[in-house]
Length: 342
Image 1 (tube, rainbow, N blue to C red):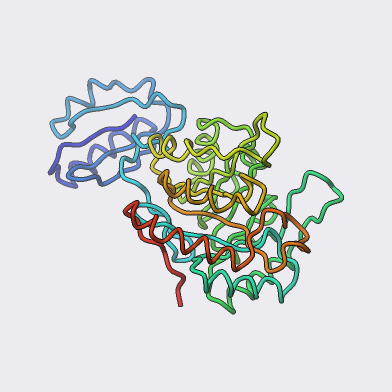
Image 2: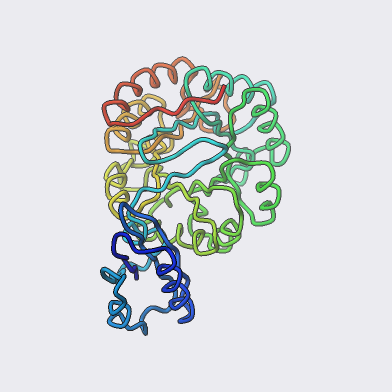
């Protein structure tokens, strides 16, 4: 449920109504819109008498939200949210590119790739320290040692770091060391993990599950936001369909659909969507044209010998070519390409 206040309502009147609603056992989240304030109500709103609320002379109207997700809902928060991760913005007129290898393999590798993607225009560095793999015999990442190498790459280049968390036991370490915490597709409905990450202060990059609907994706974001962390960035990374020519199927329609449903920024992962390096560029351009707020792209300095996902990784030269094509398209879409902090 949302309560839309009349334009020009004094703050003391908004505060008075907020106290009255909280006395009903509701959580009230105010949003300052264009010319008015919107009060988002979370809790058991089924027993709330909408008529009594509208009797308040400062209330314009009351709207019930039918969808099961509330905090992530655009009705709850009409303006686009802007999420800052390590000082880098996502959303509302910005286009942010995250780039780096699928997994951290060595100090030399991660620092070299970090410098390359920064020189090409990426604003953040990605790299997997912990790797969820379908096979238990595949490379699982370097763990905490890999996280230390990501920190060294950040120190060497100034790029904030993005990496995936797989267990609640690492929340304290990630809170201290990581700028943007990634929840991978396989953990999108790991609700215990989502709730623990929701108690953290660091922003979260939430990837869509392999076969998840938009609503299920929004409800996973709701798990994080309901615990207090409302700094969520969504990521469309391709879904599993009957097609076997590609690793997954990029759902480009998810970008405008989710923007209609939610105020949260959404980026795309063209690397996992297609599964082949030659598909990354066209999928990335399609995502930008559909209104995405950014990309997360896999880049490796030696894809042929990568320990993970080399077939879908761009070389630094290919990544530079992609960025050169993205710049005019991003500008045409009315957005600003976010530059790395020098």
